[in-house]
Image (tube, rainbow, N blue to C red; front, top):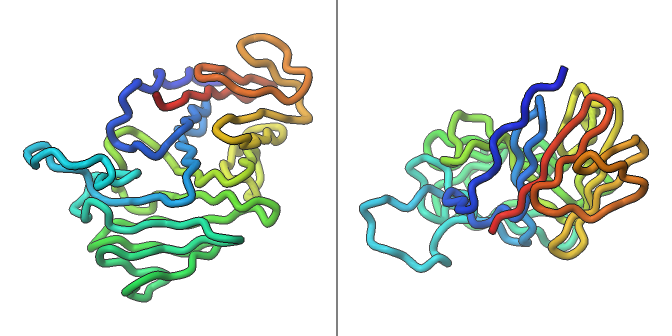
Length: 219
């Protein structure tokens, strides 16, 4: 029995301006898809602070005492780099300038924020950031996908989003600023049978045998 989907994402996603898509996956969680090649991570802007230029805010604002733009993760060529703007340790080593990120790398920000960087598929440059410590953005989220080309959702560890109880895989393909949904399984979108790959729109509900998720876009 599938549980109910979470409520729709609000139009004003104040905790990040870098997530272009949000996936609410029934029984799994909420995941943000970030499309840009450079992703900044930091602390939130203090409510009492004077207004700042939007370019000075982080894409992912974690509830913590981090600097406003503490680190930047850069997708370059066939890999990822981390640029340090505050106190950072990567794989147990202090980072003064920048460091290369590989699958499974632990990123420590400030005194106690910990993330894990994943590159689960050798066939895709898309990556995933996992929260290890209890620190999160204000908006509930279970993981962040750095979407380069494709995103695999399914039961195995090779998927960008692991959906343990699913009977098969769903492939999301990035086409510019749009997502195309494909699968060998029989799926429906908004209760209409999906006969082939289809571009998703905000609010679409994709369902199949023991799987269900909704895609929202940030306005």
